[in-house]
Length: 150
Image 1 (tube, rainbow, N blue to C red):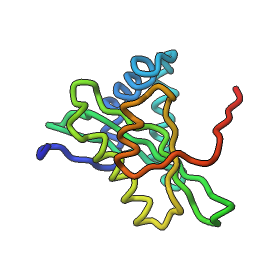
Image 2: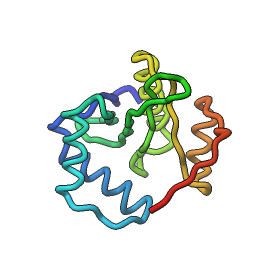
Image 3: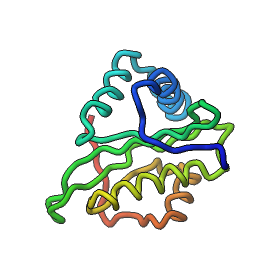
Image 4: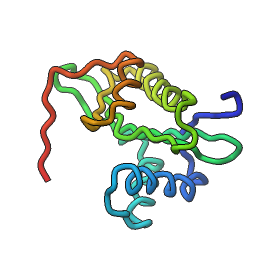
């Protein structure tokens, strides 16, 4: 897809990005719609505090068609910074065009260029499309078991 660009998010992207994030949260994951203010605060916080994380967007013809979110933490075992790929989303009509791959590779390039120990992520057990992409990209299932508490 030649006329598609992947780049870091800017403040000008916020209105379109909020719409994309709502599609991801509400339509894809079937979660309650967050308030516009809370989503806007999240995006602005990442733009204003790049040591906490960053977002990349996929843009085609001045329209955002996908995004990826990295959050940054530390690995005590490796004594280095580590990235968490928290989100990778492409709008349904643009899937199967390697946009997800390009977003993933952009994130991977970023962490390698900035000397992170690595990147970790998770996906739903039944999200076989994502699992296929992650295996294709060289990802391996962790030996660690993921737990959560709400």
